[in-house]
Image (tube, rainbow, N blue to C red; front, side, top):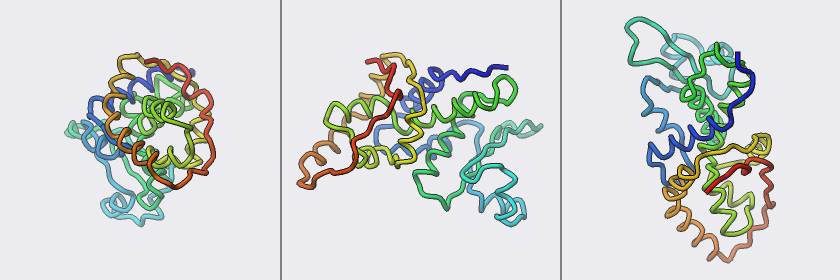
Length: 221
């Protein structure tokens, strides 16, 4: 069983998914991406509880996660649905989106609970989620345009302070330079529009300057 997370694979898969789905605006909402992903059914805990004939409060503990969880199905006659993803729609959107992105990472990376250890699977899924919602080409453009502050990051990626703390724990990953450029080209018009508005605003940004640790290491362009 593999115990070492493959951060390069996770980061590359996330950026490739952005390109495949022609994502061009921030914040990146992973829910439409997951809804269009083959073999996946997505529903909130409340709807799942209704379909299962259970109370919501009794259902959530069964999934082991308060934010989102995935079940892998391997049942005859269910070829059109391989995964069921449930999420807690009562949480703040930035938590919901990262939870959904994390679960999408498990699916895209083919985590089956057999070939990779639990810590490796979780580390890869979290890495995937952050590269999907806070793509490094986007962060690089923001850094080029001026100091990266909490306000800028929140307005462009929906990343709250807890998200920044998690970003700092993710090692840098190497992604093909052409893939970085494709992502940059996708988001450039939207980011340019935001930055033009941001820089023309008379309001001073007094939020903290951000250090993302090693998350940006390995970035190639």
